[in-house]
Image 1 (cartoon, rainbow, N blue to C red):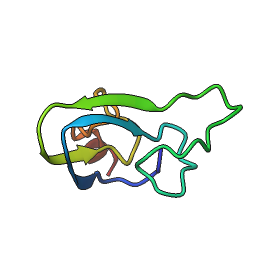
Image 2: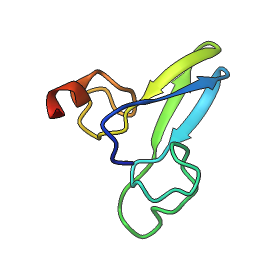
Image 3: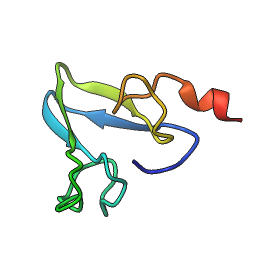
Image 4: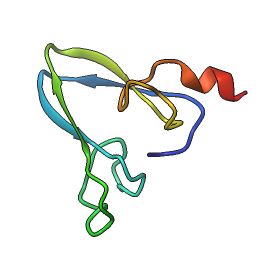
Length: 75
């Protein structure tokens, strides 16, 4: 997980997405396989309709990979 105290807002099309869980992906927040050999697996997520999503940047969300505002408690 990329360590930032804010989410990244991205526009997604409906469909299955794989978001990075290791924080090593070159194209974060998307998984690029950089986790290979770590035992970490990407977040597989079904986006039901086109629109904006907030991806957690701090790693503390209870709804990973999505932001739930947990970063606000880190300040």
